[in-house]
Image (cartoon, rainbow, N blue to C red; front, side):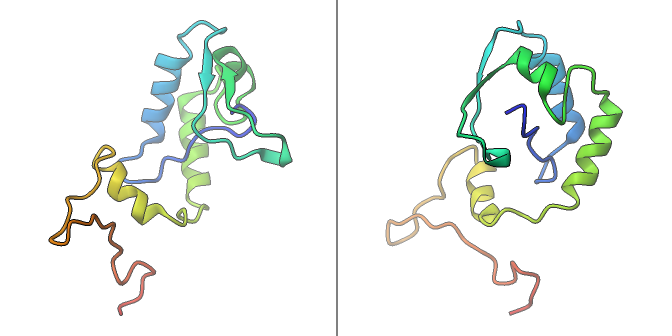
Length: 126
C-alpha cells in the first residue's frame, strides 16, 4: 500500500535494485488507473485494512518508492532500513516453501510432510 511502502529486500536472493527496476520498468509503466491488489497490508497508523490501490496512487504517494525516486536513493534507503529489521518470526519455515516455488516438502516415510528448523537457528550451538 502506498502509505506503507515496499517489501524488504534482505531475504535470500533479494535485491533492492531488482525491486526498483521491476516497479519502475514494469508496474509504473502501466496506466495510472490500473488497479493493484496487494498481498499484505500492515495497516500503518492503525488505518483500516485495505487491499487495493492504483498505479497512479503508488507513483504519487508511495512513501518509499514514488515515480520520481531515483535508483540510488531507493537502494540506499532499502539497504539501510533492511539492516535494522529483525527476521520475521516464521522466516525459516516460509523460506522452505518459497524457495521451492510453493511446493511443499516431499512426504517422509510416514507419509507426512515436514518443515524443518535447524537446532542452532537462534545462533546457539545446541
